[in-house]
Amino acid sequence: MTDTTPPALVLEGVRKRYGDVQAVAGISLTVGRGEFFGVLGPNGAGKTTLIEIMEGLREADAGSVSVLGQSPWPRRISLLPRIGVQTQSSAFFTRLTAREHLETVAALYGAGHGGAARALALVGLEGQGDVRVDVLSGGQRQRLAIASALVHGPELIFLDEPTAALDPQARRALWEVLRALKGEGRTIVYTTHHLDEAEALCDRVAIVVAGEVVALDSPARLVDAAGAPSRLMVPEERISPERAREFAGVDRVVVEGGAVVLETREPGPVLAAVGAAVGLDGVRTHSATLEDVYLELTEGT
Ligand SMILES: Nc1ncnc2c1ncn2[C@@H]1O[C@H](COP(=O)(O)OP(=O)(O)OP(=O)(O)O)[C@@H](O)[C@H]1O
Image (cartoon, rainbow, N blue to C red; front, side, top):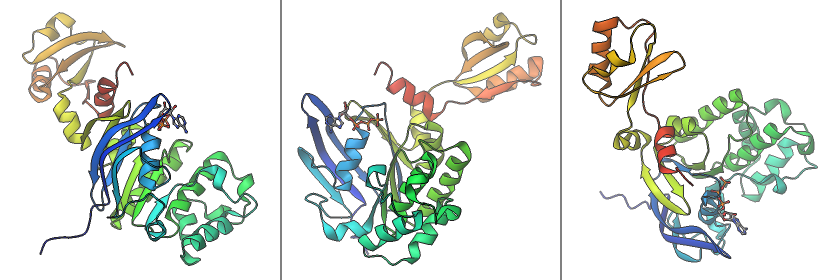
């Protein structure tokens, strides 16, 4: 039987200009149901504009957008309960408590009250349910904004830099929340400047530069395709740069922070050769990461 369920998102040739600025310059992409999809890119690359077009908060100048099989613009009431959008803090009901705020958001989507307690617990705000929104800390407000996107149990969740203002523990806790939501089959589309996070969480990422997608794939495939070298760091008292250069498969040798660094695209054989020659005590390795790929693709922007 063929699956006729439409993808979570289909964008074709989407463009958006603000005056002289071409914020989104022809973006096409598809996000499958249940996918965790990251939108990455430097400040001003067009990520927020793109997400707002997906959310139905902005109209594209050109191109087509399909969200769960429907066009999100003009605003489509039937779509709203099915998508979750991280509230901007300007849209908070500041005189309400955190719980009342979430109950109100849930009611606006036609969902019951039960979701508020669950959403508070999911983002680690169970102790702040009775605290007024206007006295929450910046990080707590951010968590409430995320809870607002989840409270009605949507199929597709959009988050714009959800971990930006969070402390490291809250950030890791949110990773677990996001993983659990994905585990429930929900689709997540989010932007972040944390490349380690995108690498840990996303099934696929799109790297956006100046309104265009310059790379789109799984983090692992992007890293493989970039062919960035691995680095082996050997304490400098154990090996000289001259000797390090003699190992087959070493592309480049530099001395950094008390270590002789061997750059190689064949880390296995080089590591074995270094081990046989001088031993592996104190040797550290660094494989290429999504951040290396990102920095290369966004260089000069
Ligand atoms: N309402 C607006 N009016 C005019 N220009 C805008 C507006 N919103 C965004 N822009 C411009 O469009 C471009 C893309 O902005 P956008 O906020 O989409 O980028 P971003 O990738 O989300 O950036 P950041 O990482 O800094 O949040 C920028 O040059 C920005 O100055």
